[in-house]
Length: 375
Image (cartoon, rainbow, N blue to C red; front, side, top):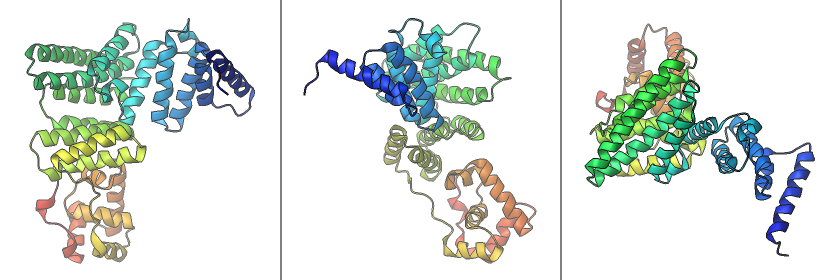
């Protein structure tokens, strides 16, 4: 039986009402049915609630979809801010941050509608109260800088000097706004410095100054805050900058590999695709590094190390830093540091050099030559 438009809306409204009375109501289902019923206020409230529920269980891509529906409904709902407990600027910033974490960025960014992305960030900044929500200003500036970096690249490709000048001026203004906001919020939020690091790196990208170190610093800042999605984005950009700077492919492969592993684990398909395209262009190997071989496993047993500690010792013997170990094994820098400390204790070694010497004496054939070390 074919339902007429009015009948379809009535059916969705009844389903939503039944779900509301249920003890097992799910916000995502409510949001879908209220929106399909044309009940914008109820759909808005349920969409925001669904976004919160999805974020709580790390369903970030799903959360973004719910929040994007909320943004579509916003202008249809009088006093929307009072209904959902946050204003439009906060909703925009929340959506942008979650999208950034999934690697999808604002939909406009990943679909290459850079002008739309830049305008969305600018609109969010204009709506923010002058003396409030500095943390949101920082995040919106980062989104705006990302869009301006892409628009600047397009202007260069088209040899449009006027457009390029405009994009660089806007990028500089956004960076200035971000820096001012960071000064306001740095004493009260640990993410301020991390967002500024991303802003500085995006500004370098806008100027076509490949700066792997700026992306390394940004990734390290987010690693310390245990935010893998943003770490993956920064590692991708770090690898991209290394390629642009003419670094050896082995060096660029390390951050690319780490970013790819995180994107796969999170199901961040758009970011994963971007990393794979970079790897294809630059001939980077995204495969995990080979383990220290069977001899390395035997070395672990001989020294009373766990299999993971044996892997870490093999990398220490090759001269890897904790950060390089973390990238190679796709673990946090803090975890790598803990493993190294445990190894030093078990070997009764004073430092990494002594531990490496022990590994070389007992299994000299298992370790790579210094020429294989990452930069």
